[in-house]
Picture (cartoon, helix red, strand yellow):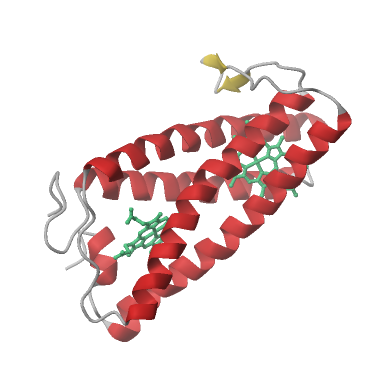
Length: 185
Ligand code: HEM
Ligand code: HEM
């Protein structure tokens, strides 16, 4: 079982819950953006409304996750990792944390600029304030570009990250996946 603090070989319960909750929401948000593309205007607005609310939720959960991570040490890396593998894992994780903030912040900027400061509707429950940015074309274009580029980069890193996790589980059989999936035998 995972505990509240990281044990010798597992992440803490909070880290595991936040990892999987955020991962599911990120997958949902890519799916929403892709299916919305071919939808008629009305349905598109609705799906993109959910995309924005899920995105802001990801942003808030990521801030919580980073605070949690700073308060709870991660378990030491698997001993059999080569030095380059350990370095690559650290750099990838750091880049993922950066992008988990940068993608939604750029989306938030895009919404704020293109809606002239209207709050982001949070599932009809409340409005999340807009960022104080301009509404001119170059600003909208900049946030659009950033959101797209960061989202593409994150997708590439997630694919690499998942491939690495599966390689360690099925090929190396070194217990890496169990660190984040404590219910595995
Ligand atoms: C981790 C969270 C998020 C992910 C993974 C994500 C991903 C994406 C992707 C892949 C697209 C399609 C890119 C394109 O081809 O233009 C997109 C579009 C969009 N996203 Fe996000 N997004 C996230 C968060 C947000 C947030 C928080 C907002 C606003 C509050 C937002 C607003 C938008 C908007 C308005 C578009 C449409 C852009 C257009 O007009 O083409 N996104 N998002
Ligand atoms: C959108 C999807 C995902 C994101 C953004 C993500 C992000 C991250 C981050 C940032 C860490 C570093 C944790 C830390 O040390 O603080 C991590 C660890 C980990 N993730 Fe993911 N992850 C995703 C999906 C997955 C999936 C689908 C798997 C499994 C197939 C997975 C397996 C793992 C494992 C095993 C670790 C621990 C690595 C270690 O031992 O150091 N992740 N993930």
